[in-house]
Length: 301
Image 1: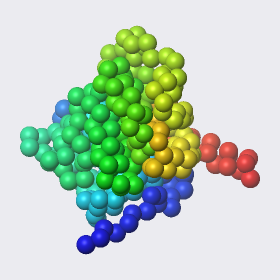
Image 2: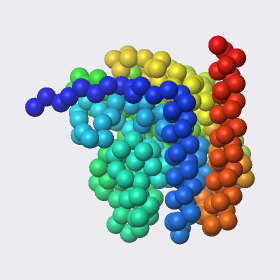
Image 3: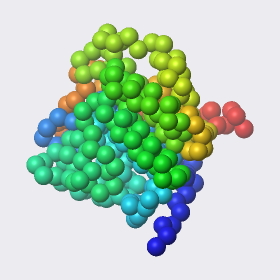
């Protein structure tokens, strides 16, 4: 039987995508308020806009046909942000959010603290050891190219893990094999678990490093939904011969003022009072941002 072709993007406006990203952050905070252990909340919040754009707009995926050979593949290299990916997938319709809340992080749960493709249908790669996701994605893109398939392979990395040599070996291999079907997004929140990234590894000039490896480089505000959409819309065809990296400048803990750029919230849990405070901060920030977006739209008419 021939697989049904998939469309690349859904017809969603920037405002609708912003609403979905806000829903993702809200559900993430609510889960943190019910889960007894620590959640990697800072890096989840920094990645929320990227994951929303990919699952809701950028990737050719069908929650009702998860094995379609024409689907785009997604590799979460920063595997500690698994719960953010789970919620993004739940909002897209792959499975229920309630199922995540009921069993996240429990022994033998499909919703582990790091993703497992064996446990959870729809997940394309088991990750968690940093620096391994891009090499996996390169192999998947190379396999697709060898079979003459036209889907893309997307990979989301944290900037901290790009201090791993395996990332740059993969970057070199991707260009050497002309993998234009490979797209990497870097969640560049500039923080590690206990320090600023630049205190441990000198990353600058960061975009130039990727360019020196022969990649197309796109540099965006990772919380500007319109910029993320534009980056997806302007991707070269999968048949092109250069991989693309979208360097997304983000804020760890984005949307919750007392978590933003606060290393104490690399991972944590939320009691009732903290949850209420976080949700209030999130809703206040979102209302303010939507007001700014509305004014900007009117000024551009």
